[in-house]
Length: 422
Image (tube, rainbow, N blue to C red; front, side):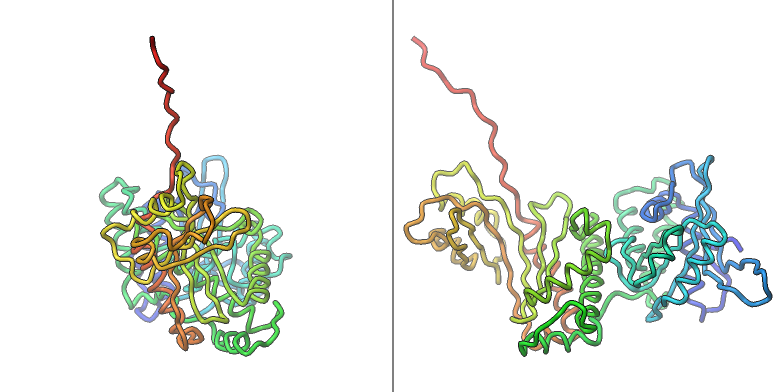
């Protein structure tokens, strides 16, 4: 059946209702369909025709009941047809390897280009699937994943940027957001780390040697990746601009490498760390969770001015950016050249005396200056729920208190030297 914007299904069938409303919106609001499906490799342009179906049944060679995907997307560009199966989950229901691999086989059999999964599980990027699927299954069929929150975020950002000019289309998109916002839709945000998060914390704090293949370690890193995506989506909706997790080109193109390197970093440093790209921000925002010390560190590091004659003037350049603002629990760190150890002091102390960051007998200008907030979570750190709650509060709070105030140093244009005239 064609996807319906207002599906006539039982109230208990939340999964079918949400999927049909989403796919129905794709057909009515082309800009929203482009925003989402282009991330899934779809060759979709302004003149492409999008048709979506729900409760798709395929003819079987035998009489057994085969897989029944929740939806099918068909995009006709005029010279090419691209198709994708949709499988969605609502509430606490999670995707399973067996089901997704069955859909990948079904897609291959019918020459369907991709399988797209949607659930309340988060993925770093649409190509980084929350499940570990056999590579043999994705050789001829692409696999993508979206969280419901990421879809809601895209709809909000599109509305906020006035990317939908048609009044009726804008209204329908706003209604989809309203529906996904409601508790009865079954769309939820991340509210806890994996069950074995506490086991990781206790092991690290007791000095147990870790290796990157431990089950509780890999589960915790997986939960960390979901938390990072959750944070980017919420901050994106708060500022009305898309926030992304910064990944190297290699890590962005290889989900296994991205996961493995974070596991290895955790075993070596007892810490989880990530950088975020925020549009037009002075620098990347860094978040780290120090499992050993039970603290989270949030910071932004800027290049120090090179046109100052004294180190105190360089430090004042940054501290003045907080004039009249609250500097509660913020610190400043100065990085010096020539292997001179970095120095750190509270922002309040630096504002009163910029010399607090200058090491004795050092006249060199700092190379970089960093604004830092260290939050000691204590016992809350190992709580699967309290850890997520605290990080979800502190992350946007730092951006509000510091990140949005910061401006990067820009060298002044050179001036023509005045020459003496007779």
